[in-house]
Image (tube, rainbow, N blue to C red; front, side, top):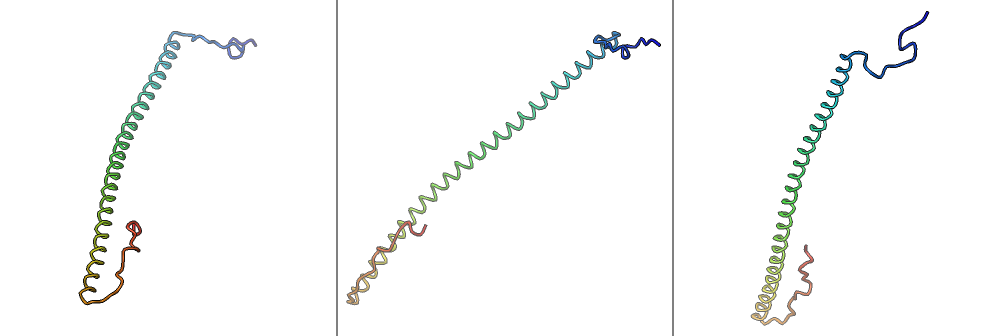
Length: 122
């Protein structure tokens, strides 16, 4: 029994046997290409959107960082002002104690600011 099929003879056709099959393969290739292009475009669009969102988040964090630095500088200035006020208060307290003791004629060494360290309480 002799067989006429290409499969049994071991010969494979690389060309489509009919124009309909040729059209179908070309159509399939075009559809696959279109699908890949569409998929690439969707990926690019998604990544562009994500990139834009990330840029907005970065700008937000940069603004917050600048505000944080500004608040830190204002806080530092407030601390310096409080330290000066505390130093002035201690000086006035010492002067008042001296005057009070002098009024009553008490000879006593007044406390001094030797133990005061303006940055020690921070």
